[in-house]
Length: 427
Image 1 (cartoon, rainbow, N blue to C red):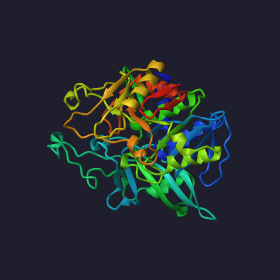
Image 2 (cartoon, rainbow, N blue to C red; image 1 turned 45 degrees about the vertical axis):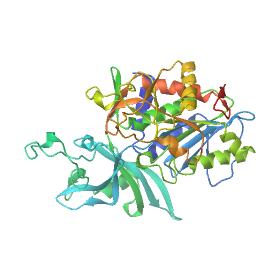
Image 3 (cartoon, rainbow, N blue to C red; image 1 turned 90 degrees about the horizontal axis):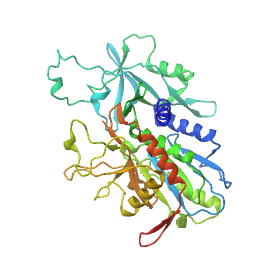
Image 4 (tube, rainbow, N blue to C red; image 1 turned 135 degrees about the horizontal axis):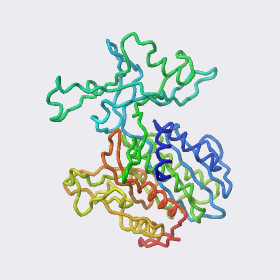
């Protein structure tokens, strides 16, 4: 198996929720010598050292301080969340069957969650002598399923279903009188007493490993952990350059990013400003010579339904990194950012391809212009071509994880000098 895909699958299996993904990334950064920072403390930064900071345990930003003065920030961003179901505070529904009370998080393809082995993970807030502590929790083994209705009882099932989240998408975990209720299972998984649990953020996830098969890979959460892994890998592999490399991995993209730790919040702007303050340099001048790669997967031309793609801008697995374009600015790409990224990929030997929606189809949005509401810089929206975006189990090209990681490493070693007319020097 391609080593990049193997490492990607390891990250996916370790990241049933964004909380776990942040913990995984923080451990990788720590192993590489990066030091944690707290937003509540003074920052003292040492040239040549790397640092990371988290917000709400669900988003993480890392950076490496260059030796001497630096030109600006070379940043990449991806998101750690995927469409799923959140467990409500009163977790169990009454009845003969024990079912979980849930609500949808993001826009999933509902049918792909039925008849699959599901588990639950998240974080617990647990009572302590002086307040509360936060603990990661993963119930591990499959312990839930959302059963389909048999074709005999629903003979029109293959004619299309209109799924009601409160009726058709309710997870089953046992029978009335089962030995342990959900809260007890969660407490035991975390090694705490039930009465000490103050609150929790729990989510369903598909308990299924990733696979590489022929030209493809299939796994849960490829949107967007495939890009998140590649951003982290490229960030860690890159050699120091004249710019400050910054890795941004956000939560809540699937629900609009407008949260305290999402891309539309102040997290990135706060970290960049604090960094400049600690180094005694001007924040606005550094931002003026900065660049952002917004990395989120793209829609490959479907093998059975090519009519959904713009024939002149169809993209394919294993054909290179996708550059996304949209006239109404759902994507941040323009001629300046597209040309700069093209030069980076040419130097790295990585192919690119260009995506635009059919003119009669609505475009989805992503991190680029959302982040620009707080930190306004030149940005490009890129991704990797995949099938079945927002399915519980997605498919992409076997070559593409490596393409993205190598392009990111090459990008992070660059610095740019931007001219007012849109020209630039890339060094």
